[in-house]
Image (cartoon, rainbow, N blue to C red):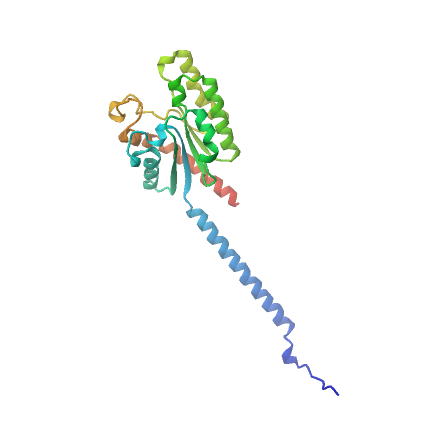
Length: 239
């Protein structure tokens, strides 16, 4: 005959004990998830804002030491003002707006948070039809808008040798596009530097290290507005 085994009360956990254990486990899991969320948010808050300076030789640092190039000087200046930023150099000497458009996809990576667009000087120097320049910039700005990237558009001015009509048509491109796309706008990238022999290289067209520093000083308030847009965008994405 088989022996009967008596099941004692000691071997059966009380219902209240099981429920309490489940509650404790759930609470611990919730705390762990909350702590993980806090760590993720803290990491996001500490993540540098990556701004791509997208342009031509005025951006790339043609004729100056690498440490004097616009992106490097701008990053250093902004960090000194307390901003956690990285400014990448997306400038290529000689680029027209067409050349910029052709390389935008591989120049502006997925890690970019905002873009400073500085193009057009070479179009004006070559006398390219302002309609072509406008169309290229329109496509560049539309591509960046499609990626939801805040943009600071910098203006350029035509040399006088092409005549008044050309200059008027060319110069109008930048403020009109900025208005159309609701962009931050810095009217003239070379403001305060152009024609100043102390701030330019011997070619009279490219700023020297001191000239780049002056550009950085003048454009900083606009770049800080750009940084503010990125921060607002990040905050909205969290909510």
